[in-house]
Length: 157
Image (cartoon, rainbow, N blue to C red; front, side, top):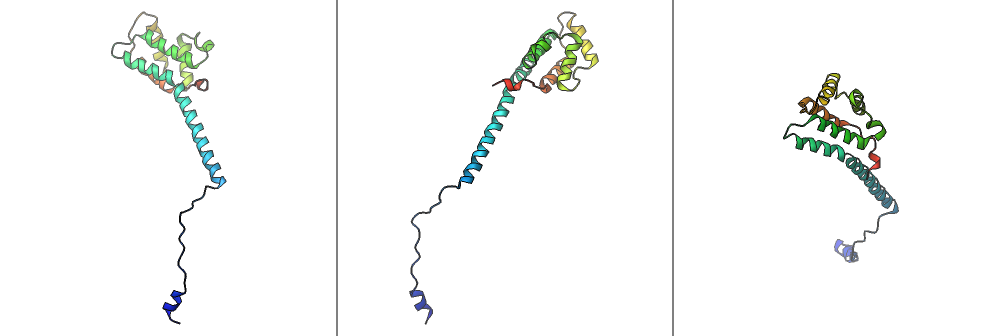
């Protein structure tokens, strides 16, 4: 038997008309659903945290706008107090003044942005009447606004 006779006995290959992919197995649908749910939860938590920091960002923006003219020390202190009232209990923040106010602020960041010398300068300048804030005072307030921990961020949204 020759090779050509053997090939003549073979039938043609049947090619499927369409490629059937089928659907995914149920396990893959569960995996995809879990990933989508996890990503949605992470996105929501990040959005809430970002949204809760809006008062800090607004205070920093207001300081930037005020920098074109000398910022008054009482304006700076009011801005700091207003921002702190948003994030911390009113009963705690509203009654604070003087050295205890600045100690409270330092406690919220874990760092001493307001050292003893700056606290004394701040207190003395604040009660002498309208005075422009020094660059060191403005920097300390901006640093506190950037690094203060947000305790009540879960309540926003």
